[in-house]
Image (cartoon, rainbow, N blue to C red; front, top):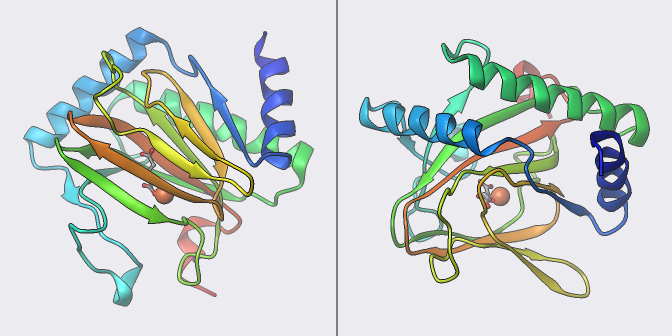
Length: 206
Ligand SMILES: O=C(O)CCC(=O)C(=O)O
Ligand SMILES: [Fe+2]
């Protein structure tokens, strides 16, 4: 399947079942580079414990999520991060042209789940975070195997879909769907993000 066919399928699936798994969204070589950058960032203290809620409602709670994150934007010094942002931008624009989702912007961060951490069942679009329309996760686990855990459980109306966090795989889903990161028994790497229906600088507005 070529990229155009993949895109068309992604569009159909997102409006139908609400999610789409895109394998090899980035190459194995790119995954390696992204993991090195994440490891460097982690060692230099660029990662912060992730919280829940926004601004005044922000809180840290290890019983809900155990990951550490580093936000990624155009100020990043690595070319490959810019290439990834370009790819997401293109995807966002194509989804807009065909699905009229009114996507204006996106926000994204690296995430590292240390051994034995998880992210309990939640939705990404909620009252204090009403502008997230499409969630995406690029998985970066080079030698992931059954038993390592850290799968993403996606709770659909009629079934629960279990998505393996395989290197290079991009998962897209509608941000109002309930989902959960199951216990990860190994350190787990990813880039998570959200396509927004408002400019990021304006998302503090209702
Ligand atoms: O890493 C994943 O599979 C999902 C992460 C997630 O749900 C989130 O950060 O909101
Ligand atoms: Fe989420």
